[in-house]
Image (tube, rainbow, N blue to C red; front, side):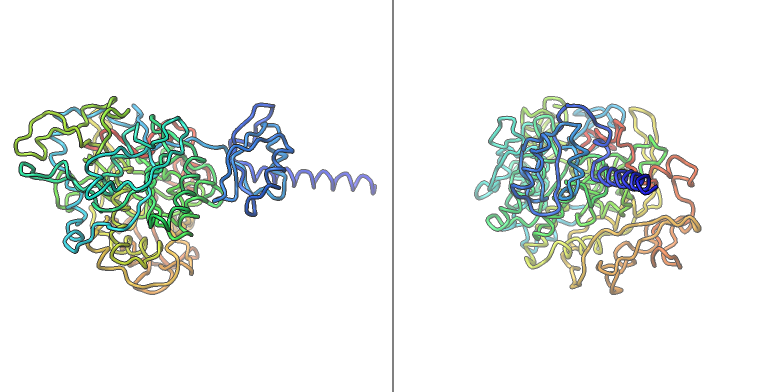
Length: 592
């Protein structure tokens, strides 16, 4: 009997060990077998040393690249050895070196490319700087001077609007490894993002120009870290390496902001995701990290009306995650509406309230790289010179290009952060984030709808915390209302209460909004500003928290619906869905 008991104990011990090792393996790796090699990112529990490499090599692994910023490295490992590697007590987590995109064009989710006539009719002028009150900062003499913003994208092309008194792209490095060591923009996305952050509008200035396409911080220094190739594609390891470089270059170039207009689906908690761990390292180094929310707000493949579709690393609570608004071709924000493609929270698995705020992202005019991949695919998105010159015509501009997506909204916030840090260099990333959220405009309609002319499908959005976050970016208010507080500005976790069928902030006493009235959830998210009384129950008694995010009847139905499980069931929404994996930061022609 004693021997039999021992056998039973051994079986249970082995089962427990297998379960523990599976918890260390990303979902895509748990069923892999055989000799096929996979490039994986291994995160360790302690800082990386030669002993860690040796432990992987003993199991048939080969070192590809060190990623010290996340206490890990990329290895090529036989599939059959992954479970054994996960049993190593020094290993924290193993995930694939996943692909990601800064752009995705899907016929199922993206309208067709714009024609020149449609651009003229729909865009007229791009008034995003007026809409978010950028001229107020310029009148104060704030233009980003002395602040460095790292742009992790498809590269930046040498363009006149980025020169000013000297070329303001002060550093270039390639992390793609496709032979283009210059880090120039072969895709056309990174230059557009860079122009939104810091273009000075020189090519649209002069005696015949009636409008200048300036960036938010038109004298900021840009650090070009190319992580996306000529097709707008990259990898986790490339982005992580670039973040590590930004941290190491912080002091030399005064890098205070990092812009990530890219993303991929969420596969695990942000606590394990290597991409999220890297952006948190930048935050810990004192850098404001701004990330696009994703372009999956139209994704209803799980009957979830686009909820739960935020992409990584925008799911991390320490970063500023930005959704996209439409300026409607006017300088006033009173008629502005949410872009239907803008991804919505809460985040998959962790249920973090995202996005943090919204900014203009639809039909945005900025710089582009002539001859780049996007330009070749969609040449009609080059705007006519008549949009900004009195003697202009329908000839295409050789400088400015129109794109839509949350990729365009994120750099609006990155440029604003640069202005705030020029005004007050002592601000911490938490203080920048909290000030942006508290000062954001909270005046929205209850609902809005848009019918896609290409498909005839009508999309209706409700202006709740998971759609517009804490509100609409307002530069004047952000510069005027920073305040002093203690605590972190982590985006709050939310929870579903099956009794009330409401969703509530989970209280965090360490967060700034868990403290004083000036920085309470009421002050930051705006109380009843977002929705009608049937849907919002702000306040009330609940074991989950003191403030309700969304009560009443949840838009995804009840616990018997697929949409409910998609948002609250713990797994990523549509991680195997084409529309979710393809539209991650850019639309060629948004809601026009």
